[in-house]
Length: 482
Picture 1: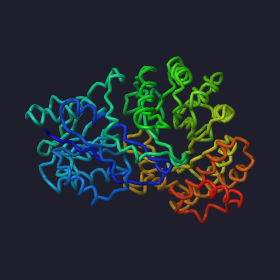
Picture 2: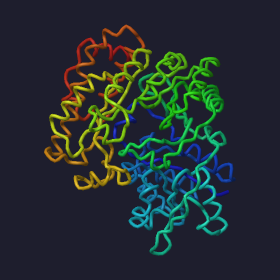
Picture 3: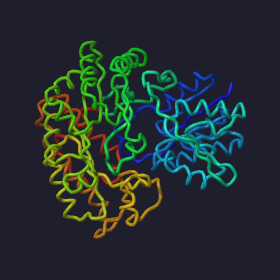
Picture 4: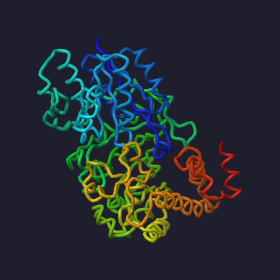
């Protein structure tokens, strides 16, 4: 039986991953469909395990796969290619596959630059493409008939037609039993087991800095509420999952379906906490059922704000107004949930004054968690042509929202980098003083643990001496929570 080894790349930036560790959902679905097609498959989450390339080499040698696949977004794609290079060094006959958002758009560059490392790029959804590609290779079939791939043929890059998106998301086959569940937890909640679940795919929005609306061609599909709830119950009962992050770009688009999900979680007492992302208009739309969000188990909501002035919001094509964001965050906070949002800095027109205004308006929004992120000029984003002439670093591994890639006209890289740290310092040093006065014990402990996590596990740990002095009372509570 032919064997496929799915390997996450050993890339770390200390941004989102600082909050916790969760399974790679794309690999879980691909593994399920590859296994259903009659092949042996293993998921090796080298990223979560903090394994080195040498340890990855040992795993490949031990498993002896016929196929090795990796995946990457822009900042991790070089690490993914390194994984495939190791596979080829071990045995040149191993067939290598690369997927993910960056490869989906930049397949030509990848195949031209790495002709002896990357054999095939899987574009779009991989659940049907990967097993079909393996079947074609095993039978020496016509690869031109495999939709959704790109590969080299001599000096030419062949791109097959786009594979249609999977219509029925309830038909997907997740291989949850192949997950090393002991690896996954939400750091803020000790003893938790963190899962990642998908209830919908796609995004119809126009945000010009984002890749998702382009990847999905602005389409949108959703699972049934019943299927989603049954999966949460399976993860809870079979694998001990206590908290789930939704991977959806836009889970709340259909109010009727979303409210049914909330009602079923309440009615069936699912008791699995949810972390999710949604948009400002949906929060405003759902003002009358925010209580259902919380009662159902929604714990933490990331709201797509991105900017604090109307000019930049319009540039990003967010289609929201500044005051609407403020109101959405207030509604979530008042319903007893945690709020999180991010603010994009480092555009060409950025100045110290504009950064100061962003910080002050972030304070006005008053989210529990604010992130001040560098613009990442992904080469496939709609905004890329406007940023290209201002890019000063072409190393994809630094396109991680932390490194300054775009140099503002009137600022240096060093100045914009320090400005981000200053924003974090001032925002959180002002908020942390309020923590002892929070009456909700769960929220108070959650925020204190989160602050401790940010200081120890995130990219900010590199700048910890510059963040400011933590009040003694908070230091004590941090120690008590250990």
